[in-house]
Amino acid sequence: MAHLELRPKQRVSSFRKLAIGSWGAAYDPTVYGTLTVRMDRALAYMEAFQRSTGLRLTVTHLVLKALAEALRRCPDANAVLRFHRIYLRQRITVSALLRSASGWAPVRVVDADRLGLRDLVLALDAAHEDARVRRGFRWVEKVPAPLMRLFTGGVSFLAVTLNLDLGRFGLPRDAFGAAVVTDVGELGLDSAYLPLVPFTRVPVFLAPGAVRDTPVVEEGKVVVGKVMSLNASIDHRFIDGFHAGVLANTLKELLEDPEAAFGPPDAAASGG
Image: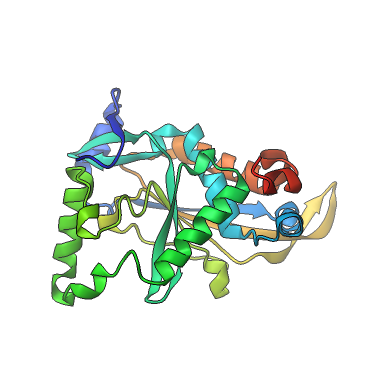
């Protein structure tokens, strides 16, 4: 039974067909880029949100929500490659790589574009707790290291290429979604570029860096601003400069003024 809701992309440009045919694996066509984002308003918004609801709103939560909206505005980027053909996802699922008992685990949020910030925080935190107690990726421990690459490749083929639901075997459904976020700022890094991991079939990896004080120009004057680097790795086989521009502009718009994007903190905290 299929577990991914997909439909074939009907119109594919000659360039896209050439790109798909030119690269055989997701680690070959990687394009890297960095977006600089002002975080002054976002930091204030995060504090106000926590005062209103008691829930901790993090950079990861905000980036996931902004990324989900970016994928909604750019549906061609919310896609997966199967049989050398682009399939558009019918739902927007994004994930974050978070710490778990075994190291790091993907924690996904389904329909992230439809969730208010409060619901997104609750959904991600609940999924993180589930992963933290090892109820999602125990299977990794059972696979011998020499067979891991063969195993992950096989799972990827069955779950994505053939679109089979492997939940009955204890494997997570659509574990990574269309995009993955990892906050490398928690590690004290300003910049880091993540590799596209072939078996995940994910075309977008985002790594928010640490928020730092940086001289910026406001109204002709140099002031100290809170700035963050948003580092991206994308699969050029079906995400080109136009798509990247839509994603980048949306992320910048929403992160630099979250109140305008998501409403006042008290409204966002109540699920608006």
